[in-house]
Length: 369
Ligand SMILES: [Zn+2]
Image (cartoon, rainbow, N blue to C red; front, side):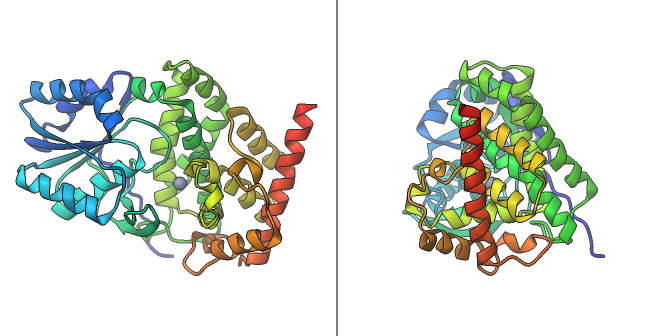
């Protein structure tokens, strides 16, 4: 028995029009905000953010993010934040700008505020940045000393983004419960290096239940750009529940299979959460889940539009050699798949990938009849 650790953001704010409350929510954090975001995110939010900060007498400096979370961009932005004497960082947008802001704030020891404009991953709440090279190749994980001081989601903005982002976030969130449960069964350590609390495990379970109950109707609503109670629940599941679930319970096969597939160029146009959804099917096959459970996941994926076959994640010609390369990458030392409650070999992953693809294909054929 070791120690259990649960970590989470200090404050989580979510709702329609929440961005108007940004200034009020951060006035105790700093006096001059360094606001970074991509062009689209900034143009959508700048006027509201400015007014909200001005109302609280917080001054600001806006800077456009150049698109990659890499060392050169982190250093460039860090220098601007220092020369402008900013004392709080605000990241506005998707995963990469969120991770960049988290890295800058960690290096400068400043508070960090996350304002996601899409709910496509569970990155916003975590104390982790994924650093890439300038060409967008995975470089390393940067484990941060603390989670964000505030995560603020304006659900009106998120509901107006393309539905594929929210669906992809559901794919990332779909893995959370199964990976958390595998880590719990195997007594594996979570991201901050402790054992999972039952709290984190139950939050991961709640995440899964909300997806099954509300995922499809949330998707239909955001296709119309509107916020409903179901949309609110799914944004919370994708961001808060999946965030705490993965970080404080741990990752396992589903994400490792995702990482394995990233060696195939043809899967790069498929979003993180979409590949994780297929990785979840592989996880279930590998762990010998009963058909009823696999069918529930297949049914969910097909209803919301997540991939269930190799061709749907971009792999058109799955040769044995190619899939064995993926399986080997998936099982490299240090990969999260070794958190499964049993030893995993590349052969087992290879078999589970083809079996998952066959189940997905059969399911799609059956429902199209
Ligand atoms: Zn993920």
